[in-house]
Image (tube, rainbow, N blue to C red; front, top):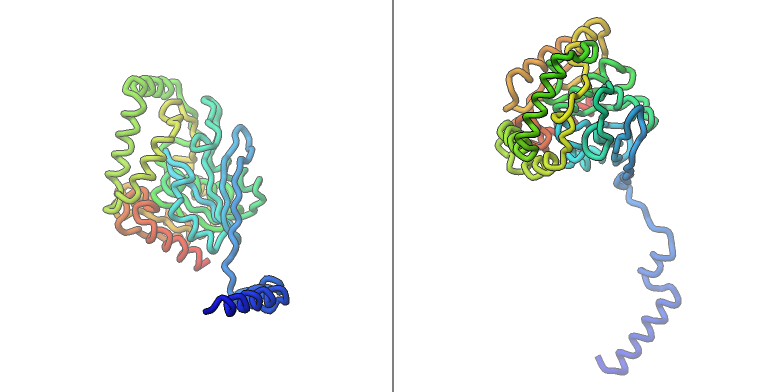
Amino acid sequence: MSSTSRLKFQLLFLACMMLGLLPSLACAQGPVAQPKNPVRQLLNKKGKIAIAGAQLYYEETGRGTPVVLLHGHSFDRRMWDPQVAELARYYRVIRYDMRGYGLSSLPVEGQQFLHANDLYQLLQALHIPKAHLVGVSLGGFVAVDLMALHPESVLSVVSCSGSIYPRPGPEEPITEAEIARRRTEIAQLQARGTFAFKTQWLKSLLKSSGPDSVRSAPLLRQMVQDWSMWQPLHVEPRVLLGHSLVPRLRAHPVQVPLLLLAGARESAARQKDNETLQQLVPGAQVAVVPNAGHVANLDNPVAFTQAVLQFLATL
């Protein structure tokens, strides 16, 4: 192209832009066509909610019916990293740090509280009358506890490796002998060192994990490393219903859709607890997550997420 031709082309281009004749400029000036099936816009919120005696850190993603994710002991909300994005495509997903974990307040020794009551207050503060609950380990116990205490606030429960907590509940006060025993255990732990304790704890977690634990190991290691260890270093109150759960469900039956999961490599005792709870809640289902251990949502995140979504889709 000669210099004269190039100059004519540039002048024509500028003229078209000034007159609004170029398609790109016309699109910028006119209304933008919307896709027929727009992807649901995700909301992202985070902050702290004040409840009785504590502040709970939470994060919220997505829109729709609320789904609350409850983490396990020694972990925090990050436990749900593999699930949040997929669940948020269909639901309003809330994950939070329980009292004593992550960015939430630490408990005060000697002050009684229940994790389920904390969750109930969180739901009220977020103006959520009812929600689906999904919990693993400690989070599973808390979800089941809330189902027993406030079934009117629960749409459904998915509990994995956390159905019936086999220890005393708040109706059995901590005895002086128990306090003395715990003081001895705490002194032994402190002498041993927190690093050694966390190393052994992580080793036991990974041992119980599925064949693909190498994938979940970095996140598990980071969460355990960040864990305050308040619970083993203090005389913890009765934070779960424990032994009082089964009598309560027998005296006050609930009609809440319930899915009880366990990793294929989970202990026989945990799987037996699932069967026991299944008999107490009409219509409860029991299923196994393949290639997974105690922390099934991290050991096999795809299978776990599919099990949750398929269950919720039936409700």
